[in-house]
Image 1 (cartoon, rainbow, N blue to C red):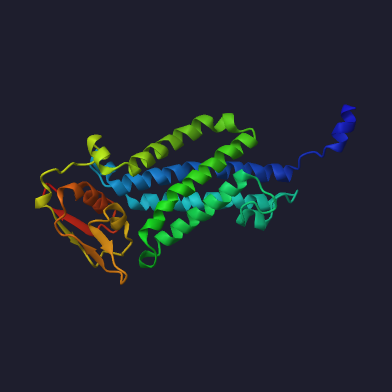
Image 2: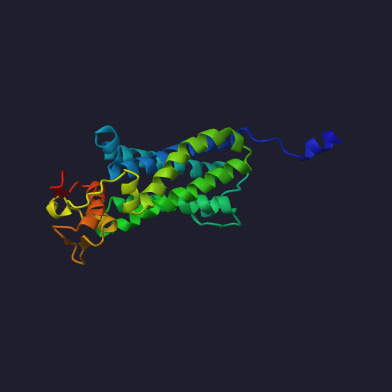
Length: 265
């Protein structure tokens, strides 16, 4: 009876086993660098690295991590096209739920495509508003869900549990801190309060450096406003309550075009 069953069940293809090994390895690399990309971006944009170490974070490192995440993620997805059983096609890798795909595959497809879109639009400068970059949080969330569901479905959850939690926890914690109100961050000591000193703060923006990403507007909308003609309008003397937001905007500016004078800046 056992011999009859073994005769019916085809032996796993060595070729498919090799392809799946490549898919597994690239997925783990992509997952790790994706979490590091998110953490590095937040630490760089908020200036928390400089606050903790006294040194500026290299934004080039954020870009390198993002590119490596995209490359390994693409290898992970494309590797399934080379399976002998033909279970994955081009449409299944490009369109969520195409061909009756599982939810974990759809999360991976949407997450990777959104990650690519965020990366491309971040490089377009003036053509795209900076708020689109915030969708990177959603992208990382979807890809994390895809990774954990995939590991569970393939029986690898126990093997990646410790490593997965280790690299995901800092990214989750920093994301939560990133969306907290500035007053909460001041109480936690992660931002300078600046109460009673803002009348001595002056804002200046280097028009030659400014690329109109609108990230400053996302951080402090009552101080910075990007006009329809691409020109940035801003308050030169912000109020006391706006100082933490202005400081965050200055740190988040990728071109370092915002300069603050006074109040110990």
